[in-house]
Image (cartoon, rainbow, N blue to C red; front, side):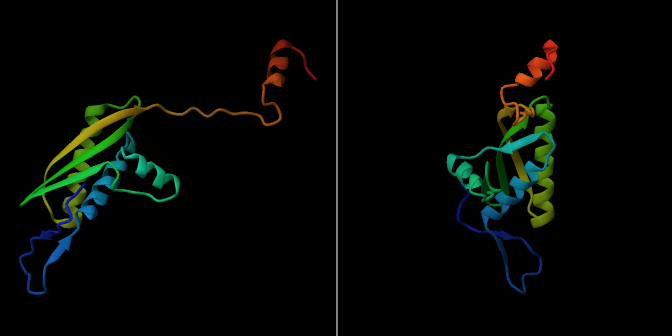
Length: 148
């Protein structure tokens, strides 16, 4: 979990005041950036995250941890990837995308993005079940040559 301390953006002109970002905002940015990469199936989360998601509450911080030590920002991301993708390629794209989005949206420099592959998700095949023929008896009869 991220610290409760705010991250202050370095701005040359602070005559109007300072800009502070909560670590959870950076977690959301990183979570959305990682989930948008092709090959990422879903983000890894806790049981509470899964229950919240079932209730319709999206938690974009899911699977993201931020560590801030002075000017060094480190991000850990836990993901599931789709079956058949190149894991090193997807992990590299995740790292690039997170660094890019955090820099673009906050002007902060990310020193490292650690990607943890928690699992592989196989594609779900659609199963067409005819509600009028749940047990497939009509199909079996057609294959046997018995037509009604």
